[in-house]
Length: 307
Ligand code: PMP
Image (cartoon, rainbow, N blue to C red; front, side, top):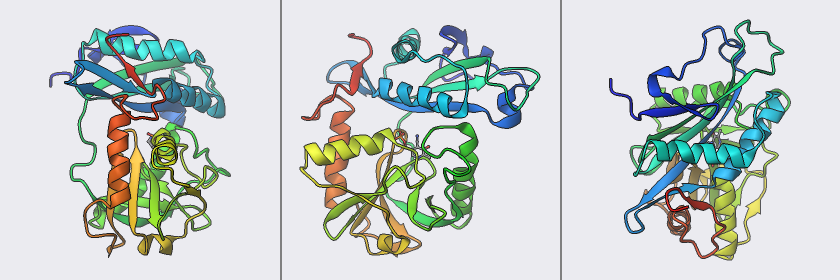
């Protein structure tokens, strides 16, 4: 098969797609020692420009992730950000993209306490929608979201992802589009790759960062947009499962998932099947923000070619 792009990046150097390899005996493959980031860039026909969204914030979380799982990798956020942009330019990509930065431990004798040598791979690949259909039928998973007593949910450690994968597979087997996981205490945590918000009794709510969630950057963007552009007072509080059943609106959000509404939870319909009013306003604001067009612009959207 043809590679989707010509170049990937390894430790700041361009490598041919087929040459971005990791040894089978690496610590990463044996013990799941690795951290990563997933970002997006959006092509604007109007501006003839590509905008990469919150690259430095993602790289900051990558560095944070390395600290938590003890990988001795690069810490220079500006350098990492520039490397990613230079990879996009090297491939001359001019479409919507999904981008990744992955830090692996490539030591061939694979000991559990290896903290290096770290290898940083980056990829930028054309991508449009993550979810095929818009509107998700979700199942509350029988798997609990991993807790901070056993694994670090707030960062992007690759080992965490078996948790969401099991929940996703279970939900697909049962005929749903996606899964939401509860905390060990039975509160709503998040989905396999996205945070969750609900509108209930007129109030926008999402679980706080201490509820076993990944500290999502899209979640943070939504919070900022809802507060500054819509003047909303968002409730960060634990959410019960049954509150979801009686919510007016529910949406999930993530860099890849963007802002997508939930049409049912455990077959209980939410709203009328289309995105609710507040969800639509937030979707609209988010779409503006990724192109640098939100009024409360935070310099989140980085022009890739003009700069
Ligand atoms: N939760 C999990 C478990 C995720 O993997 C992701 C995707 N990174 C998210 C939430 C959403 O995070 P972000 O908005 O930073 O992409």
